[in-house]
Length: 263
Image (tube, rainbow, N blue to C red; front, top):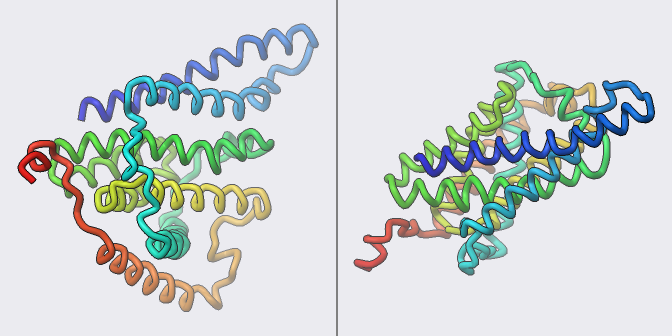
């Protein structure tokens, strides 16, 4: 648990450090050119996110958390990845429906809008961020938890940490539920590839909808209430069915060293 929390706080530290390092030259530039200080947020938000991703990736590599084990980068199977994609899209609909009912305030909407204003932020959120977060939360944190606790306890703790990590009330519940799914998949497969695929699809769809439909609060309001029930039932059946097939296609992995040695 200490290692998991330490890695989370280090990532927070990387984000703060990146913002500070970029704000200093940014303020100097603004002062020299007599520009509005409000421009600082627009100039720094996306680049600082990218820099923090690079810093944290380097840290994980140097400390040995990025594994070269082939199992960690296995696609499992083409059919498993196809099931993963179906679970992702159906799960996104169900989660969006849940969040539209809960109506939790989004305190970081302005920050996300700033990040998505340019290609640097879009790439960081939809591609690089998901890869780093899977290296961190599944490849490092979930792995450490699985080696110490029972699978159930490790998966629950991993999901809670992933949810709370996002800080934004509008994301905590959704991220926590997604974190449970990702931790379970990693436990069953020992592979980051399905987890990265889910994360990229989720973030990319979120960015796409935010850019092209900025005034739309949910998928249900975008598609219309007439089709909500049908899509919800279909999504639920697909989600549960594909999840069951993913379970049947994999075996529980051995994570504790003493169990692996006995085997």
